[in-house]
Length: 254
Ligand SMILES: [Zn+2]
Ligand SMILES: [Zn+2]
Image (cartoon, rainbow, N blue to C red; front, side, top):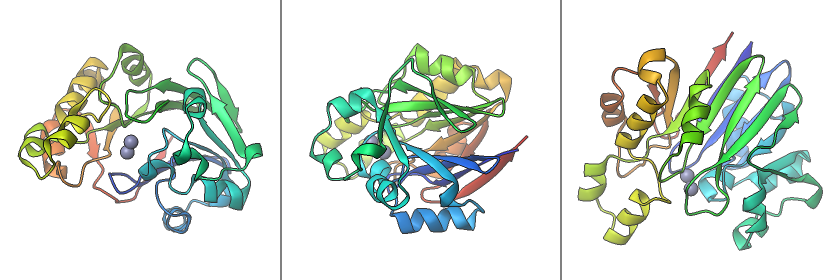
């Protein structure tokens, strides 16, 4: 049985853990290590079983405690090859030990214990940002987050997934009428920003989720420009679970 948890998701922090047969991998570490340990423990996960951390990109809501995790547990931290090649102060500040630093490139397959991990590049204002396909025990999980637009590679990955994690960051009207200055509104809604609720629904339709009834977790909801109710309304007709900001969810899948 594969167990996984959305330890938390949203603009305040993002982290996921997948567990099988005493092995786990974590995707993103956007909370303090103390909080991650606590959130895992509350869901019956053990951080000592985490063999590696995979980062989607270096924004603090995803990478906050990547360095602390690597130094404390001496486990590998994977980031995309492009991300490392552009690494600047944001990366060096994490202080990930050199011998824990690993890269993954689009088209490359990385094996960690029973897990097979592949990545695909996303379109975000953080160089080398990526999403992941994680396979274990004949199940595939796909994470698409922090991307201003999507492409056929991401849609195909989602088609092949058993469970999808998809960003549904903002409601177009709420963003337009909300408190963000115009420049920030353009950033969020731009090609290198985030997916809107409408884009998420388009993605789900393109990936066949209206017909196949597969489970999708809608993640990374904006605190200012979205609500759970709006995402639920937009994704009616799909087997959709909307992740309230910062809430923890656990699932078992056979
Ligand atoms: Zn980001
Ligand atoms: Zn983010």
